[in-house]
Amino acid sequence: MADLSVIITSHNKPRFAKEAVQSLLAQTHRDWQGILVDSGVLLGQGFFDYLHDPRLKVIPSGETPELARTKNMASWCFNRVINSGELKGELIVYLNDDDLFYPEAFATYWAFYQQHNREPQAMYSSQDIGLVDPQGKTQIIGRRVADRPAGRFCKGRRMDCRVDYLQFCHSARILEKFRESYKTTQYHSEDKGDAHHADGIFMEQVGALTKVHNIDKVLSMNRRTVQSANLEYAASPLGRLLVTFRAKLRGARERLFSARRY
Image (cartoon, rainbow, N blue to C red):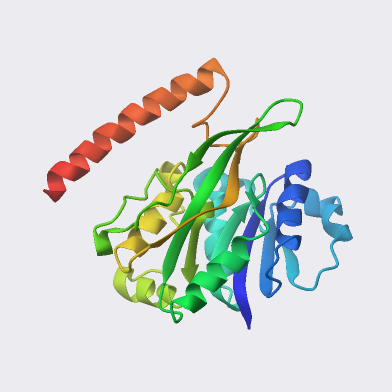
């Protein structure tokens, strides 16, 4: 039994994947278990052979070209690991290969959980947003602040498209309630149409079942790279155009949601 389990997804980003893994190895809280799911590219090259930490297991995703065409692969990998029965942690967190946890992340989540008698079933923290230039230098360009509780359960902050998956930590126990409430073991949406906010859908569903406690401490960095799918802070004119369109679409969706709610 570990205190925390972390699921890491990796797809052919060698430099960033190494930095993401190093952010796990640098955690001040040592009692964690990690399962890294690689698409097969780096694993097939022996890239992870340098890892000898028994807390971290590397497995191939098993994805095929057909799966990649029809599924949101990050969600598919998350669901596969959750349903494998291999997760041993009381708390579960997620990491993609171009993002980072800061060294105190696991210690902070675990301390908050213990200080509140293991009652919080979901938490989220503040986060830096970094933009990586073509030379590999990262500049902090923004911050998401966890300054109030989230989730419909406590009439808190909306999370879809406002809170990043990397800020989110939930208990293994809440997944039982998720299964009972939503009658599915597909926790993270695998629908291609939900790719840009599958994490938000999951967090909103959890947030309808339990209060999402806020920890106003910066525990991670969500990085925008040339290979990132999320273009919210893209540097290119095309990226900014797509971001503007997406923001307008999101605003229209939220207005519709508010009208239905009230």
